[in-house]
Image (tube, rainbow, N blue to C red; front, side, top):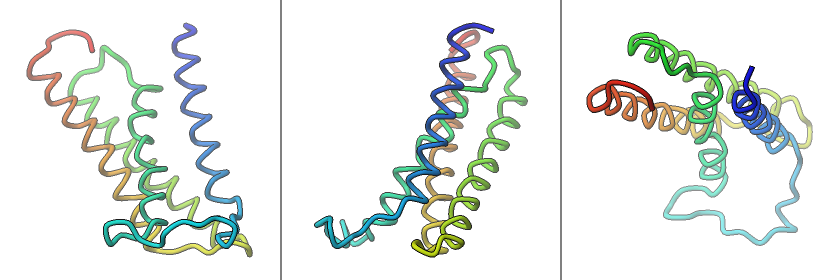
Length: 137
């Protein structure tokens, strides 16, 4: 196994660990002076979106294979989407079970929209790559 693959895996698993920590650590909002809304959207939902946005790209970067067919890449992308939804569901469930935190279905929705957005970015990349490049990334 090459060092590059190990670094990719390490980056992905560090990210997943950070997501779990961010979702489970209790913050005292009274100590932090942040606005409640930005452009009419709750800051909390934007934070959830930002945390989960890199998931699909980092997972793709860590686990995809260059020589897979387009069909296999699409299947792998669908798998990544559902694994991201599973991660989001697990973190929200963990927040529900943590007495100092509270889970929210709208947080889960923000997480899933974020994973879907990341999946869409990779999908567009694969379509463009398949259309304009015959080999390599």
